[in-house]
Length: 146
Image (cartoon, rainbow, N blue to C red):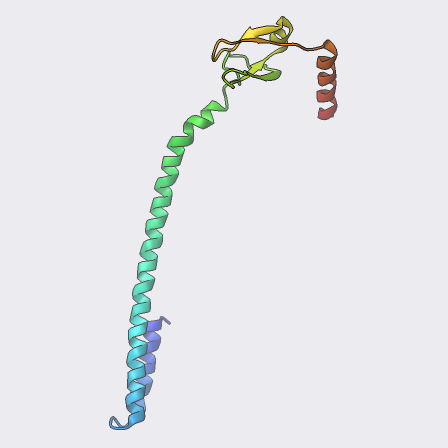
């Protein structure tokens, strides 16, 4: 039963009492019933407005999801590219260029060459390492995988 139906029911009950219209208590009861009716109508209007706002929010949420898909679509595609942008998918190490800050993926062949040019800014990068450090890293990686 809706609130307006309940208010109408109460009004019907009061009318069924056949109260004296000149009595002070009857006037108070009628004023309260009128108030309940007005409040019930206002609540129904507020519920309708609430439903309308919820529908609009749902529509905006769907629209926003579409915009997010368009905006972030490019970022999802970037995950498939190698770190260095040099076309090498088998990069074993990452190096940060001190000049431009680009993260460059290098493989063991590039590392053993002792250096390379940054594909971003052209800065010459030199790699100074010990063979033992590489062997230790490979052993640590294989022990972590187990």
